[in-house]
Amino acid sequence: MPVYKIAGLNVGFEPQYDMLRKRSEKYRCEEKADFNIGITDNLLEQQLDLYKGVGEAELEYLWMGTAFNVKLLEYNGMFLHSSTVVVDGKAYSFSAPCGTGKSTHTSLWLKLFGEKAFILNDDKAAYRKIDGKYYAYGTPFSGKHDISVNTAAELAGICFLERAEENSIERMDIDEAVPLIFSQTLRPSNLNRTIMLCDFIDELINNIPIYKLKCNMDVEAAEVAFNAMSKM
Picture 1 (cartoon, rainbow, N blue to C red):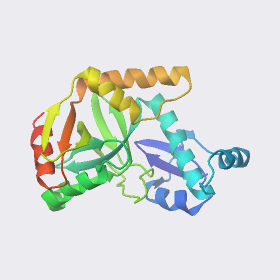
Picture 2: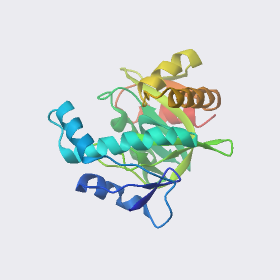
Picture 3: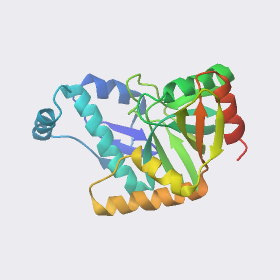
Picture 4: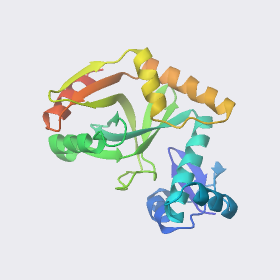
């Protein structure tokens, strides 16, 4: 079985379709798996009946992403539905409901910083706490545009976006941040994993600053965000 290094973990799975196979190829490694994930033919058929209009290749890709992120909770990690950009070795994640403009916003960072910046993951960056520090990782589960880099960067901040005519940013209170994070990550049905998720989020928001950015689509929005988030 092929093994892929994702978020510092060696994950064994056998892609059946090109969508997952091609997106995972740059994560391929020759090491022993820490764990295996997969989807059976029977389960795939059940999911196809449940999710009408979703093809087998896309469903395999989505299911494998879910399976990985469930296991990630056991390794002091979680994912956030976000577009994550790296500047000067620090990762900045931007999250919001679909259609708000996460990818558009991080593209402004590329315009502002040029070669100093890159998109780590455009849809589901993985976070892990290792030796007391929080890191963001690229993953193969990278949205419709498949933008990801197989590397890690220390997490500097998380920001939730709102559309506005003027650009402004503020640090969020913990009580305000928690439901937003829960709304943009996987909520497992298993009680033990739910506890793991709650514990991870509790530590995360007490160690990583969380912001709210009201922004337009001008490059000034990236400048406002960076000036605030890079100072922490």
